Length: 418
Image 1: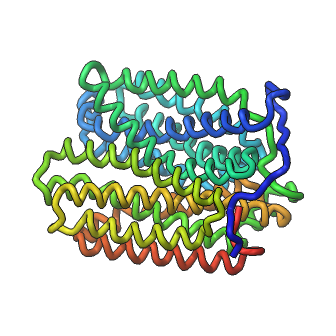
Image 2: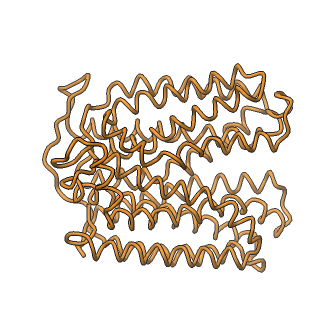
């Protein structure tokens, strides 16, 4: 296996509204803006989660109905991530990243104006469609515009936008609802998304298809779904995400029951730990990958850390301080594991580019696996309902993810590096 995932790349030149603006500063601007759009997309779900009772009361609906509304956000991604990735290759990442935050702002407007549940549900579906564009357009933009060590760092950071955005939205909603109406939170979110639309106009115009690829969408789709390295990488990325989502679902309730703390305090602990630890995990991972650390060895080490952290979190004998440390250790490990997979994705897309697969489709296939795993996660975790089973599932999933990544490296040209 190659020793590094960060390779020198030629100077990149992309057209846009400011064609004279090139170099590292534009790449950094692209990374910051794309990450902000990703945070905003997931913040919408995080904002709604603690507001289910209040929103349900205002819309004359029960919490269960609002819970179904939240699930509607994930439905488009679970069904259409792969096709959405192909659409990014046809339209270009820049157009998609202009349209996606606009649709999110439109969804915010629908929620602010909603006086009946049907409009609220429709707005959430619209937000979910926008999220498909963010998932695939964001990854494709970073894969095709960032170069050198910045690409490894940027893709590792990109892997964290979902948990960080969800937690940021959770904290924001809890803060806003103390002083004013819940609708104000969504109005403010919409204003931020419109600002992102204006910023996205400055993103570079670039193709999301590396190498020489046929233009037929069917040929590109076939190249993607028959690429074993990409499918194995997608599996390796999906499994830590499944464990992370499942842990998020049960951790707050478990800490409250096992350590006799309020559910509100427990939720705050979980949200704060996720933001800090997942960003730390991805940042450290990006730095290590950029300094020639072997990605497979790093994945194995972080998988071991993740299993130990899961045990520390869920073993009832652990004191609260140790359980919180376990939670932060797990989120740190997840940020690293997910970051490794996303940092490797550009290399896989480049290898497959000559066979006709674009970066958008590559991201779409990975996100399809992640979305399907997330769709199955609630049934798995709530169905098991035991801390022994939760730790066992985490260990099995991470071991399988490591095996998938090792197999993908063996099948890849020169090993997996990016």
